[in-house]
Amino acid sequence: MDKDQEVDIQSVIDICLLAGRIMMQSGAETYRAEDTMTRMAAAYGISQTHSFVTPTGIIFSMDGVNPTRLVRINERSTDLEKVARVNSISRKISSGDISLSEASAALKELEKANLAFPVWIQIIAAAVASGCFLIMFKGIWGDFLPAFFVGGIGFSSLLLIHHFTKVKFFAEFSSSFVIGLLSVLLVSLGLGEQLDKIIIGSVMPLVPGLLITNAVRDLMAGHFVSGLSKGAEAFLTAFAIGAGVAVVFSF
Image 1 (cartoon, rainbow, N blue to C red):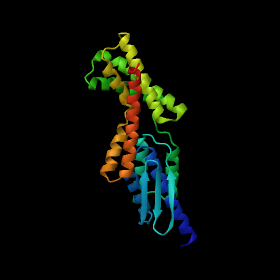
Image 2: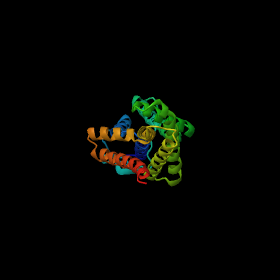
Image 3: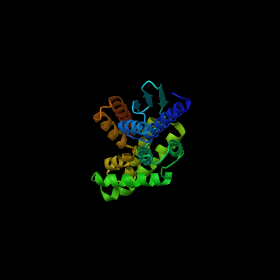
Image 4: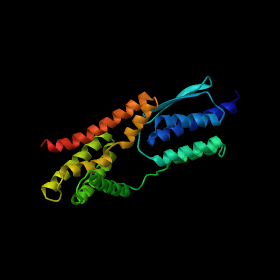
């Protein structure tokens, strides 16, 4: 193998690992990340690749060509726009529309990009969703505004506490505690009527729906390590939400 070919192979490995890391950090399913990495490598003429993807790391190797590479995944969030853009870049690579250097530059730019909605829009969306979930759970329209405000404040506290502590489960526990406390206060002041419906509607923006869906899809696809890991993470999040509300009622 000459030196230029070795450099190209290292570049292919780098962009495959980068694409997989962006997808897993953005909430993609495990099988989708593995399939994308395999397709990208195959598009550059490297067919014998093996990848092992988990929520916390990616192992990628090529048969007999290079040492196995490992990248850690320390942060995870939900950003389906980034997942869609990685898929778009992967399709362009497969069809030969972009070169290796262009694909690498596009992925590095995408990794640094902040595609999330502004915080104030996220808070308003969480507030509206809380009120709508209350109605969906057969709550009364009179409790729409209490759920709107409690859900918005609860989601704001989640973002604020997570920003300062960087501990996801503590932030979820604290925000659900705030939701329970505010709901009890509003009902006791006569500003709300159905306490259970207000709490249920307000905690729904905190529920890890995408995580549960991905855990089930990974298990059905045979990725048991990733499926069980995501299921455990979803269980801990649900426990934190329930414990935060339960603490309010224990006093």
